[in-house]
Image 1: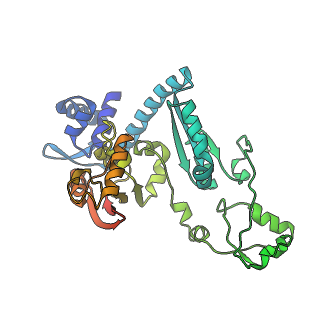
Image 2: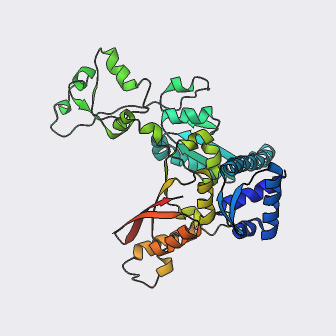
Image 3: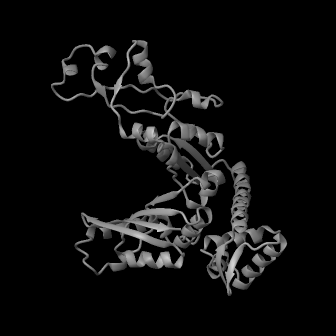
Length: 371
């Protein structure tokens, strides 16, 4: 078994079982790819693909396991090469950080901007989640460091470095009894329902601990996040930021088997950018390999550069946005459902339903497909 055979195998799977596309991606010939895959199947003693004539129709159950392991081996081989680069030069490599939404949205942007200025060649991966999800990322060695709020009990095996402390502020409408200018007490707060941020779904909360010290309980209004926790939705939803090629490392095989559906937002930013290693066909091919036959939700907007002469005044905002995307090195999505349908047909995805809306000169869509 050769490493290049696994590389050919992964490329075919990620190209929607299109050997020609895989050969083009690998800068080799189609017969060469077919021959190496057949040699690999002969060595293993079973078929990786089901064939219909000269075409590959689908992946066998045994082949699915082989492909998953092959992708993992190739990623590890790439990681070894990256490790060599990182050890030789600290200004290159990658850094993966797990953090909460609040930190990622309000605290880290300035820090990340300065970090990128100092280390422009270091690839920074930011993964968001609850404190429990971040602790799971740490345990599975998916991140290099964690930035979380509270929940120290979840990180007992790590070295904890405090950055700053939260200070809560009470906000009430004008004319509210608590706005009379008197000294605010825990007892006074306990008399009113509170809307507050909870940092995790389990474990202690500094807010509840403050009330407990006064032998009181806060009257916290039932909010969406608390409701999802009660219903068990929180454990079933995971938000991942990164390239689709990283999913093999970010989500274990056991976890992938439990996933019923996926959702992708702003796919065009990367997979229509013209980058030779990031094509929309590869995007769907990778997902089909990792999550065969799953339902997927795709949310984005329809680009206008493909229809620049049609109603340019009406879609002026979209055109300006498309141009900004191109200048920044990002991609522009296809202009309509017909163009997307061509992609789905080419990658053997099934469009189940399409929802479209227009607001302020931008046409947005939600497509439900089966991989």
